[in-house]
Amino acid sequence: MDERRLAEQCKRKDDTAWGELYRSCASRLRAVCLRYMQDKDDAEDVLQDAFVKAFDTIGSFSYRGEGSLLAWMKRITVNTALTQLRQKNSLSLVPIEDAESYEEPAVESIRQISEQTLLTMIAELPVGCRTVFNLFCMEGFSHRDIARMLHINEKSSSSQLARARRALSLRIGEYIKNGE
Image (cartoon, rainbow, N blue to C red; front, side):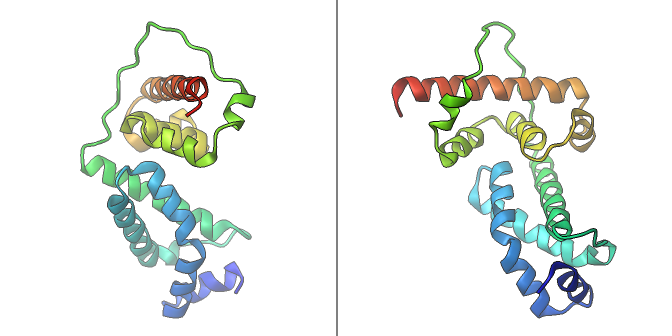
């Protein structure tokens, strides 16, 4: 079923349509949840809460072309993850170390590492750094948007991204050096 028709049927509270929506995008949205939440159970809770919110607010969805329903669901999922992080008070920001300089790894070096390994490295970042990294690099939000979403200032967003990049760069360097 095409996305426009699926959205219309979901608006009519059609259980079959909701099941199809879940089957069509749950795995992608679960991956989004896992980028923000370190614990798989928390990620599943976020996914479930996101679908409940989508069900409750589907009337506000406006079809804007193929992919807009998934994009709408993804936005709800990200916001739900951020809400859960704030509620757990686990969205602490990490002060950036201003000493050691570092070199960003060459693109060729990064291409030697599997996607799953890179995602694991990102998941191991401190929560604040990981959240800003995901919002900026994966979701494409600006520092202004991130600051608004996380209730921080833009400089904090920028410094968390710098911290995340530095930590990832060092981790990638170690990985390549040690042939992990």
